[in-house]
Image (cartoon, rainbow, N blue to C red; front, side, top):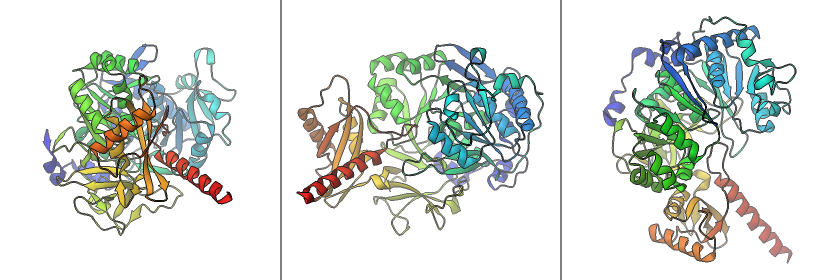
Length: 554
């Protein structure tokens, strides 16, 4: 294991990598980096598992052949360097072929999450001006309701199932084209991905990811995930989202490491099956997925205990209870990692670097980044004072984000990129997550981070999930309210609510416990699994306004 301070201070990478970071390398192609250079006889790129337990493996050589064929098809349709190619595809080999083919000709791949409805798809396709969209028979009907939809290529089912008149048939077209297609060589500043932010507080905004970001994706995969040649790796995230395409595909494939796809809904049974069948040792996913596994208890832990070497979490803060459970029940360390679509992963408890791990902290700055905490005047804060997490771009050569396409942003102030998340610097140099800036609760003059209250609630055996928001209150400005999802054997009654209030009060402080608890069957989340506290908060604001209006009328 490398020393963290050495990695931060030396930051030693090959000259070609540093050239790429500064946009000076003119011989860079994502398909070459993630496929061609690893296309040796028998070298596996993908382990695929179907929902019915069917399986297949694909080598880098096979992907090189098929991506070249599809690249030639794209060229025949007039698609070229800088054009956008959208993929509305599940986790099948066709997705990888499309991604690599687009990259081979210098086109930009645009992922579309398969759970999106027609309006979400329409917004993204119309915003990008995609030249072509590739989908499968299951998702094809959504595109029929998309206005100004570009030409469609469909991965048809048996006997052409899912094809619409006028569509290209994916596999039929592949057979018509040569397996030889020279990659278009670009600079590190040229884009290869078009991403959209999650849009939890407004319309989803597009941003381009330059080729030099591959260096950052590979660095994270090596240093934070600690992906080793002997590991069997599985990233649970959907490649329709940043964490899935950045670190489930690009990072590991650029290292020549095989990836795992499971084409099916997330269940405890399927997760156990894939981990056992493919001897997974290195797992990455979201706290939402891990909490669902924990809820299954021994039905999950008994089947995979001792199997995993390293587990990583990203997407939202990792509650301490999850960390304890994985250590006690699975004998494995799970580490929290923090990042955004805009900047990748910039703050981590690194599996591959030796540094202190402060339980509940998001971790330390990733090598190649300088992370600071700023006050409202954008001055750097010392230990123990909450403020906004920011990236000092002047001292962060791994930071590649340069703004949104067609959208102005207030995220850049001087040399800083402002994340919008409230954090606190710890004495050991690590940083703890407090919450989204809008999520922090002000009650009786105190600032309360919802994450701490949620983590305390999750320590109670009755609680599966929790979301904490500030409810408008005339006396306290806001009071702390918790929305709680219970295990199936627990009654959501007044007695349990009082038990949970006392449980939190004893662990935190008199001002931080939830004065109101509402039991719910589910919590609002983005399609990628991130908690949407603002929906609950807005509901409480609306209720308060209605109550005040009714009082005035009376």
